[in-house]
Length: 405
Image (cartoon, rainbow, N blue to C red):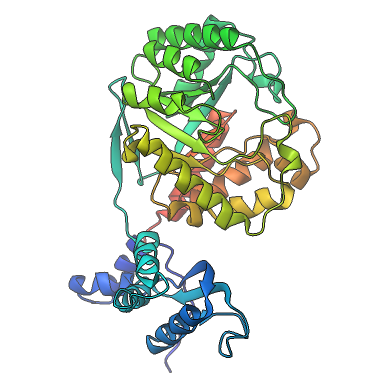
């Protein structure tokens, strides 16, 4: 009697091992990989005739599309569409839509190809001479706060450059791949610090750390061009702009001049009022659109596209449910084509989910977030506790990379 069991191949490697083990041809692997996973594409604001065409083309290729119930009768002018299919099926739909010069269906075909494209690991050279590799494993970014009032007291260095350097050395020993320095708190309700103070603290800390760690990738958390410029001149490699270039275009221009990488984060408002701006019609669509537009703006200001990293902005103009939703859907961000950074370490959403009011009690919840985001392929996880999160990453990656047996 033939017996069967259910299995979900969670990656290309695991599927290939299984096919080759049963005697399948290596040449067939690319065809099976194209069918391995059913994808869902959410398309917004589609004219009803176009929605009807998409539905018909999907059904003709053995997949499907969800549309408004009144599309068939033209009872609505426009609506959203969800397309279901494998990467291969979606590719066939894109090929057919390319032949149709109506309702921007050719533009949708290009979007389908972009969002379903397979991306190989890539390396990024940094000003310090080091390289970062994206797409092979999740990188760990350690947080060093030069501020007096960041939300987690254990991360504060109170503007002391030598203390920051000592912490940097310890984080490097614990397994950090990148260090992220901040000299202005961006916690909800935080006031701005004087620009000169932020600039001086940041430049001194970068210089002190660079003396101890000449090739450690250094990221600078700032929204001010003068701070970014001073840090880059003293040896920084990455500018981490939580405003997504909403505050100061000079941040991108400074990154471009120094051939540095640039992190663009989704945010609304400012830290003082952002938590009053949590209403969205479609959270994921709006976050992705914001990040796409911010990336295009950065490119127009001289930043190389391959130097851009994106961040969904956990805790920035999002409520608890919205934060959890974004953490559950790293794949939507990855599809945009940029490395994805997630920063949820010890934040309020971890505290609410675990019932821990004190940020000092949120380590274990943070480790769960790290494991979930690593499993989904996040490229960088930003954390306060490097050693503990490094173990969580290593264990998660060991499971994800296990061979088929």
